[in-house]
Length: 115
Length: 113
Image: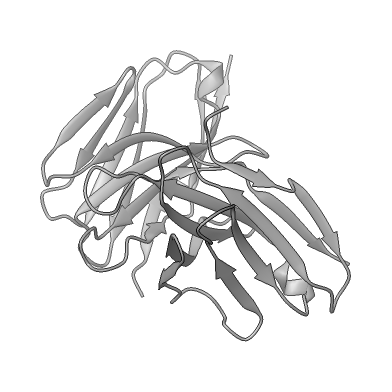
């Protein structure tokens, strides 16, 4: 499967714990985007990364959320001190580059549930 | 921030009928995309539009990029049961420094066999 791979598919955490979500982009893609989706809603942009760089984190609450895309390995979205409102589906997308004719392709998401 | 209004919110149609849905924005985009999402899965890209006025087809799907750059529509001809799902429009301003997608709230399509 050469698609965007996300894991885990489902994650349950108690309030106050940390959640780590992983995303491996499609082969040959060096641009990664994270989005969040609440039930019955569209996806909302959180952060855009290239290898080792955060390009745009304007959609992310920085107090508890952080993201990285290291030189080697998957991109990680980290949520510290989770609260009930963090329950959502988190989707990762990747593209080969930026700009025109570089559409984003999505993984199947991580469903995060906070107890 | 930018907002996309997608309509209708949901629709029920008979198998074989044609479907039309649209998306309007309060501001301009230079790229429009249409995605389909099935339950428990991620959005799958259907059509990407890069030029105002552009009309693009993908099988039974046809989408257009509005001349004003503030709207787009998607048509599905001769619907079949596997067309069931949620269709999302998304706008993007490529070249503006970031490439985030702004999504509509989706059109939920149900096809009655």
